[in-house]
Amino acid sequence: MKTYPATTEDKELIEAASTKIKLLYKENHHHVGAALRTLSGEIVSAVHVEAYVGRVTVCAEAIAIGSALSDGHEGFETIVAVRHPHSDEQNQDLTVVSPCGMCRELISDYAPNCYVLLQIDGKIVKTTISELIPYKYSRV
Image 1: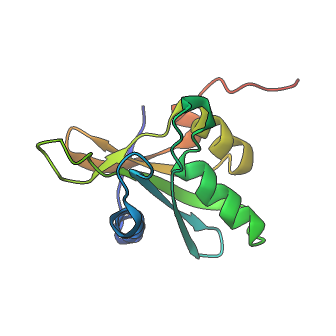
Image 2: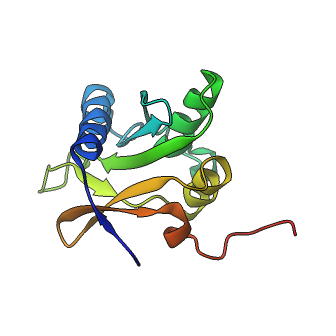
């Protein structure tokens, strides 16, 4: 997988996602925050919505994308998700996490040139969504 170094703007995006999840963290309801930068430079952040029936849970990336689209934004430059540890975990550090498969599809559908921030071996890097989902489903 080809990766690129994180920029100052990328670190601002991580901070936005971290701030959102720290502010809204609630055990068994919200433990992931996401932030995306639109092509116009605006940052949109959100938390995931957890449900007792797992299939009903909505990821933070999906909510951030939906919020941005609802506000009239088209196209996204970069997206990141940050996980807040549960209260019973020994390590209470926030961590950047990779998007799940469904979020990868969603990001690719709405922003095929989007960058995704990842934490690999303790280092923050970015890659393209096409690197994370190289053989995306297509209706060809």
